[in-house]
Length: 337
Ligand SMILES: C[S@@+](CC[C@H](N)C(=O)[O-])C[C@H]1O[C@@H](n2cnc3c(N)ncnc32)[C@H](O)[C@@H]1O
Ligand code: SF4
Ligand code: SF4
Image (cartoon, rainbow, N blue to C red):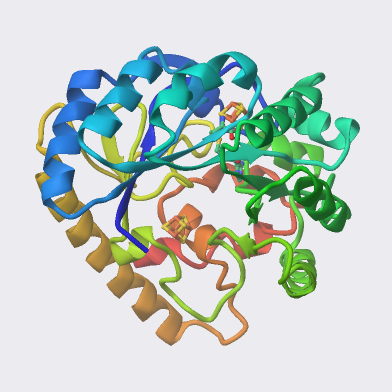
C-alpha cells in the first residue's frame, strides 16, 4: 500500500445524514487551491503517491475541476468518497482525469430505499443507485462503503448482493462512530453485537471471495494495538480547516469537537513540519496505549477507534447516556493522557 493523504476538501454537503457529525456537513469552508498545491508539491517529495478526497461531499467542493487538474499535473493517483447525490452532473468534471483515478467510493448505508434513506434522507437511495449505474456504463471503477448500525445490520448480505449486481469493485463495512444523535436513537450496537456483526462480515468475505472483495474499515475488534494506516504513518489527514489531524474518524467528532487530535495548521507550517509533528504525536500515543494495555485487565475493550475516541475526549458527552452499552467503558483511558 502506498502512502496517502486523506483530505477533507470542504465541510459543506448536499445531504445532512443522521449519523454524520454536524461539523462535517454543516459548515461553509473549502480548502484553498493554493494550500492544496503547496501540499501536493511537498508531499510528492516525501514519497506520497495517493490522494483520497472526502468531506462534506467532495463533489460540491467549489474548485473540484481545478483540483483534479492539479492532481494530474502533480501526477498523483486519486480516489474520493461521495454520497453520489449529484453524480449525474459532477461526473463530467472527472472524465478528463480517469487515467489518474483509482476509484470512486459510493456510500450506501442500506439495501433498500427505506434503510438507506433513514440515515441519508428521502431520494438519496435512488440517486446513489443511478450514480453507480452511470459509473458502470462509463467504465468508471467504483466501490462501496457501508456504516453498520442497529437499523441496517441485518442487511449486510443483501447489500453485498446489490452492489455486486451493479458492478462494484469492492465493499467496505465500518462501525458507527458514536454521536449524540445516533446514541439518542439507539443505533449504537453493543461490543458483543459488533463482534457478531464482524463474524458475519468475515463469513460474507469468505462467501464472496470469488465475486467481490469485502473488507472492514479499521475499528473492528483486534488484538493489534496499532491496526490502521494513520497510526503507522501510511496516511496523513487534512481537515477542511487545513489542520493536520490524527485521523478522519476523529475530525469533527463530538458535539464540541475536542482538538487534541490536531497537530497544527497548514496556514502556519509547511506540510513536512506537520508530518514530523504527527510522527512525534503518534509515537507518544503508541507508548501510552501500549502502557495502558500492559496494565489493563485482559477482558478490556480493545476496539481501536473507541480507544482513540476516549483518548482524544470525543465521547465525554456519552456520560449523559448511562443506558448506552458503551457507557461502562468510559472510565478507563483518561488517566493515560
Ligand atoms: C463523512 S463522509 C464524506 C464523504 C461523502 N459525503 C459520503 O457520505 O460518502 C465519509 C464516510 O464517513 C461515513 N460516516 C459519517 N458519519 C459516520 C459515523 N458517525 N461513523 C462512521 N462513519 C461515518 C459516511 O457514511 C461515509 O461513508
Ligand atoms: S455522511 Fe457524507 S453525505 Fe452524509 S452528511 Fe456526512 S458528509 Fe454529507
Ligand atoms: S480512530 Fe484511531 S484506531 Fe481508528 S482508524 Fe483512526 S487512528 Fe486508527
